[in-house]
Image: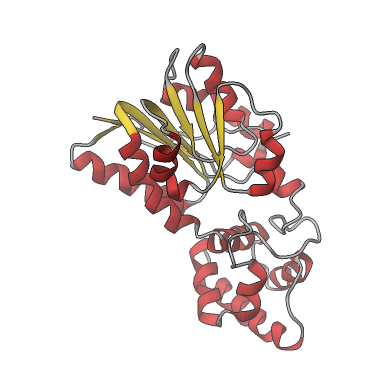
Length: 282
């Protein structure tokens, strides 16, 4: 069901070889891990990390031999590696995109194409939902979230204003209610929903915390590969790589981010905003 993006490019960057170990920090439905597993047989292992408990329960039923699956967040990467005694790591992968499972099956309001409750959490341990943000956070906070996720600052301000006005009379609980507001003001549903999802799950803050941990758990000459789908994510990755390169800790292997081919975008339109960056630990 889920088509992993940049499959060939991920393998080229990670360069997996027989008997090496890898970490997939965003396991999802395991598409990238399955590709890597074929390259690291017979004794290579993959540590797969999946934050969503419901998706974890679904995937673990059919997890392949050689993959150790953990229900946790990559923000705890070093602790997970220590607890599992997972050593000799040759590569770490982050695929920061949303899986088809979340859009099509989870029923948590990740998509504006269906009427669903405005949840947007990856983990039920998270107390913050999109509904809480829209109904209880201040106009300033909502505007900040939308401004970061949208290119038009003025439109973000207008949407935040109407959200606050609307909730005085009726709480905003469903995707269709939010979509009506966005459509009324000519905003982008995709960017608005993405901005809310990122805020609900603290994705930018978690990425900043996880990248140094990924470098720490890598062997010398190990490779770190990150696929991002948003300019803010990509900027965090780019700046981290540059900082570590200046410090002499890594060599950047992708001077410019790698994007999907025109053919891949035609086959999988969701891949169009993907950007891949890779570095090697020195």
